[in-house]
Image 1 (cartoon, one colour):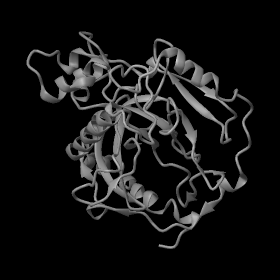
Image 2 (cartoon, helix red, strand yellow):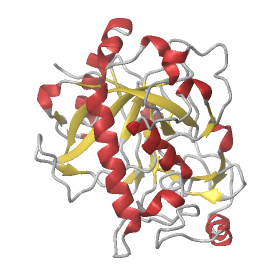
Image 3 (spheres, rainbow, N blue to C red):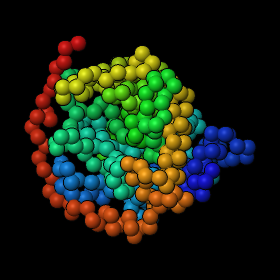
Length: 336
C-alpha cells in the first residue's frame, strides 16, 4: 500500500485487523492521547471568518482531516494504566475529532474545501447555522465530530440504500459522560451505526464512546447502549430525523428501517470509508476536496510545514467573539 510509509498508524492498523503473529498485545500498549494535538483560533468566534486550526506534537500546523491518523498511535511495551481494564484495550478503537461539544448549537464542521481543513461554522444563505432546540433536547445531544482519514465517496453507491456518499468524513455521535471541547481529539470505540439519508445522500452516523469514559467497559456493542442508557438511541433517531424541520425542511430518512446496525457493521463501514480516503489523497486529478497535508508524504497534495504555517498566518487575526443570536435559545415543539 503506497501510503503506509507516510503515517505509521496505518501499519499498526493492519497488524490489529489481521492479528499478526508476534505483535505486542493491546494490553502491552498505551494509546497516545489527545495531548499530541493542539489548536489555534483565527478570526472572531461566532462569525463566518472564525477558523480553528490544528497542530501536531511537533508544533506543525496540520489538517485534522488528512494528517491525524484514523488509528491511534501507541507507546509500545508500556503497561496499560491500572485503572484501565484489559478488555477495554482489546477493541478496535479510532481517533475522533470533536467538532461540536454536547449541548451546544453552532453547526461547526471540518472545512473540507479549505487548505488544512480547519473547523469552521457552516453558513447557509449568508447566515451562520445553528441547530434548533427541539423539545426536550438542547442543541446536539452527543459530542459530535468526525473520524479523520475517512471519506464518504459521492461516487460510491451504497448497496443497501442505493444512496451515494455525502462527500465528508464519516460522522460520530460520542455518548460518553464528559462534555468535550471543540477541536479535542479523543479515542473512541464504535458501538454501532445508523444509516441516515440526508437529502438523498448517505450520511452514516457512528455511535461510539470515549475509551476514557468511566463506564466505557460496559459498552461493547449497540445493545449495551440500549441497556445502560435507555432512551438514548430512540432520542438519537428522533433528533436526526427532526433537527431540520424548524428550518422548513422535511424530516430526514433512514436506511435499514431506522434500525441501528451493530459494532461489526460499523467497523466495516469505517474501513470502507478509510479506503475511499486513501484513494482520494492519492489522486492528482481535480476534486472539490482540499487534500493538502503535511505528513502524508506520498500524496501529490503534500505541502511543507512553511506553506502550512503561511496558510494559517493569512487567516484573519483572532478577535473578540460576536454575540450569539437570541433566537438560538428558542425551544421548538413539533407535532408527532
